[in-house]
Length: 433
Image (spheres, rainbow, N blue to C red):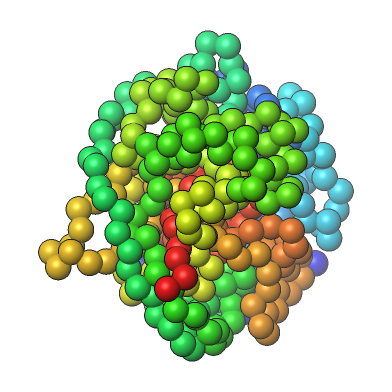
């Protein structure tokens, strides 16, 4: 198998920093896993959740299988069984262990997975030192690092679900800071009207980022109707009012599939909220519900129903991206160390502008996750990374409190099924002007 990466621009100076970036990303994964007791690292509480040790091994499989196997002279696999156990969904690369049964993998144990990581890291650093200035190879490695950053967020959201299902409901880290959000009125900001450009150029991000996923391309024109966006995210107090108004019992607020889902699953509140609506399970354990923090762990159906109840709608991803493109990547992201949502920062000095565009929660949009006009997936097995999921899912934007700052950008598109809510998913309102 030979996978091709379309080279990006501005890679002449990537070699001196690539090894440092590689070490930083790989080290962060292990640091995020460190607070998790070994007994929890193999647990799987639902099909969407993967065990911690599986995440640590899978991202390593990516570098071994996608990079070393194709570019290292005299390559030999660390353990050929791992190619089956830790393949996620790359059918072109052979069979894989079923996703819903990853919790049944007893061996390798955690120490063996860490040894696997160390062996692959040593080989990768040797390869980077020898050939890291080759643009196509450097971009393939950068893809692997961005892939690992995606799994860092999944590692945390998956362990949150695992811990929430334990009768003792232990905290991932009891020392996480308790920071109360401040009250902030919701305002509106008028959006652009007319033809605008969104998406990333083939030689780099539309907002200057040197790396983009293939699903962010090509940059293209689209038309925006007159509209406005809420200047901050919806918060817990507002969503609690929605619940207390009986919204989960009003079919007129819900998409047909959403109404069927909440009845089938018995949903009456966001995932991790207590029945009395006063506490929320977090990575810091059970904590008081902060009324002014962004509401999180909502399905698309719940976000859409809230927007209807509020006399609004969800933004399209084009509306969101065009508004975000002029703003710096800043906010309550993983680097802030809070690992839970917060409130909107104070408005700019002139009293205008969107807040919480990046961080806190991924924002559901009204847009189906679909290919842009002219989209072409990457060649070879890497074409399975994004393109084959462009069906029956919805786009989300902006990153969350568990997303690394250097991983997100205005053109970044993530996606989930409408019923998913174990991720840090919330919403911003939009209005037809």
